[in-house]
Length: 58
Image 1 (cartoon, rainbow, N blue to C red):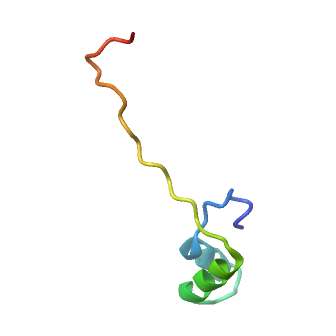
Image 2: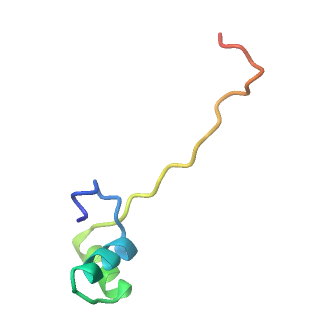
Protein backbone atom coordinates (compact mmCIF):
# COMPACT_ATOMS: atom_id res chain seq x y z
CA UNK A 1 0.00 0.00 0.00
CA UNK A 2 2.73 2.44 0.95
CA UNK A 3 4.63 1.95 -2.32
CA UNK A 4 1.47 1.89 -4.43
CA UNK A 5 0.60 5.39 -3.25
CA UNK A 6 4.12 6.83 -3.68
CA UNK A 7 4.76 7.03 0.06
CA UNK A 8 1.82 9.31 0.75
CA UNK A 9 0.10 6.89 3.12
CA UNK A 10 0.82 7.39 6.81
CA UNK A 11 -0.14 5.11 9.69
CA UNK A 12 -3.82 6.18 9.92
CA UNK A 13 -4.54 5.46 6.23
CA UNK A 14 -2.64 2.19 6.32
CA UNK A 15 -4.58 1.17 9.44
CA UNK A 16 -7.87 1.78 7.61
CA UNK A 17 -6.74 -0.24 4.58
CA UNK A 18 -5.54 -3.12 6.77
CA UNK A 19 -8.82 -3.13 8.72
CA UNK A 20 -10.74 -3.42 5.43
CA UNK A 21 -8.62 -6.48 4.63
CA UNK A 22 -9.39 -8.03 8.03
CA UNK A 23 -6.12 -7.17 9.83
CA UNK A 24 -6.95 -5.20 12.97
CA UNK A 25 -4.00 -3.37 14.53
CA UNK A 26 -3.73 -0.06 16.34
CA UNK A 27 -2.46 3.07 14.62
CA UNK A 28 0.30 3.33 17.24
CA UNK A 29 1.57 -0.17 16.41
CA UNK A 30 1.55 0.57 12.69
CA UNK A 31 3.30 3.90 13.29
CA UNK A 32 5.97 2.17 15.38
CA UNK A 33 6.58 -0.48 12.74
CA UNK A 34 6.75 2.16 10.01
CA UNK A 35 9.21 4.21 12.07
CA UNK A 36 11.39 1.11 12.60
CA UNK A 37 11.44 0.58 8.83
CA UNK A 38 12.15 4.26 8.14
CA UNK A 39 8.80 4.84 6.44
CA UNK A 40 6.73 7.98 6.87
CA UNK A 41 3.77 9.55 5.09
CA UNK A 42 4.67 12.45 2.82
CA UNK A 43 2.69 15.58 3.56
CA UNK A 44 1.22 17.84 0.93
CA UNK A 45 3.03 21.07 0.26
CA UNK A 46 1.27 24.25 1.21
CA UNK A 47 0.27 26.43 -1.75
CA UNK A 48 2.38 29.57 -1.84
CA UNK A 49 1.12 32.59 -3.74
CA UNK A 50 4.04 34.00 -5.70
CA UNK A 51 2.50 37.18 -7.14
CA UNK A 52 -0.63 39.28 -6.92
CA UNK A 53 -3.18 39.30 -9.73
CA UNK A 54 -2.69 43.04 -10.35
CA UNK A 55 1.03 42.79 -11.07
CA UNK A 56 1.94 42.18 -14.72
CA UNK A 57 4.48 39.57 -15.74
CA UNK A 58 7.96 40.85 -16.55
